[in-house]
Length: 504
Image 1 (cartoon, helix red, strand yellow):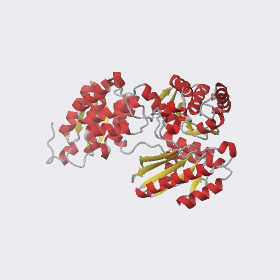
Image 2: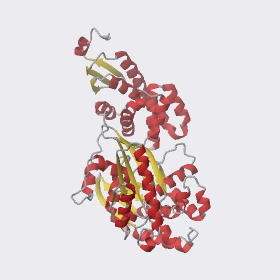
Image 3: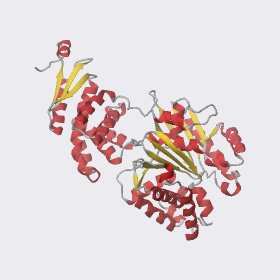
Image 4: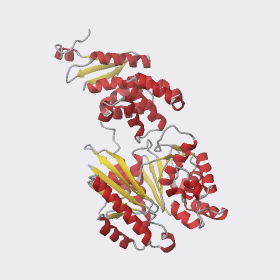
């Protein structure tokens, strides 16, 4: 099944198409966006203008036709701050439905914050998160602690709204207007104490401004990956960008590929919001997310709806979905093995998480039979709940389990990123190879540790590949410098006596 979510914001409109698998998992496969600027002039008049409405309706119609051409079964259309704030909201909604055939759902400020949080948290490795979604018309803040929603705020600090209020006719800011804008931002932002932030809280940001800032920082640092999700931007880098964006004129900003013409006029105000937020709340870095509102809307749709009788999502509804971050399918069989390795100091917490993710993705159908180079590309392109460094280590380890020479090439290619982690590739790769043999044999097994690792096969559907398992165990033993033995029970030897030769 294919589902599309269209998000109509203050500055931009974007459609993301998803392919939903039979197990309920979903992955985006295409995007379409337009700078429709629906909120243009709204601050001054209180009404959506005719031209912005026409641009938006045309963009929605284009999205609908694209979805129809691709046989998308469901198209979910949502409106945010400009629609809910406009005095002519009902007129706009009626025109959209008449001219596009789609009915728009208008989110409250709280819903926008909650769904943004829901969409982002599943691809972030943290349970205490301050999530912000910086759009053209508003700034949504959501704070969760141990997956419980503690605070939700929607503030009128969108990048286009601020630009319209403080920029001159040429799109630049005078020192006086910039100072006034910074003062307004600081006054409206809550303090760390008011939000009740835990000291372990991770700051996660999404929205076009945050993504552009991440790409700009990556270009400046000659970053080796074309990947924004989970990229960490330091506070010093944010400060430098903010000063640079105010210094440059619009034509100069237009020529910066990471920013582009569509966002050049609002990037300075947006970067100032991010800078002030980090300074006021004492964050040294912000984690960029490419997931948010649209992913949250999709999750709610796939769960069959969680809204109350009035059709409004509450924090309790979203918390129920947040709590469903279950262990990825297919990992239960390996959990005992990895827990035994962790408990006995053979892998640390970080390595255990990498192995879990590698087992889940590396043994999936799209990776299990693919060429090693293709596997590496697939794994690195995905937005997984881990740092880029951990994702790189995971991807190379999966390749190492099947093609050591190819993995060695990747280690040399990314030596500057891996640094001391290169030594872990052999250990993680050999462990994954052993897990893969056990997984493909469909064997049931138990693990124990006493000076070495002992794996006892207790049941198997067919002949157990004992020699393959022994070779994998020998390689893993060499990596961890501990004995690793594979033992097939007497009952299994008798059951398959005529099918497989088993050593004494």
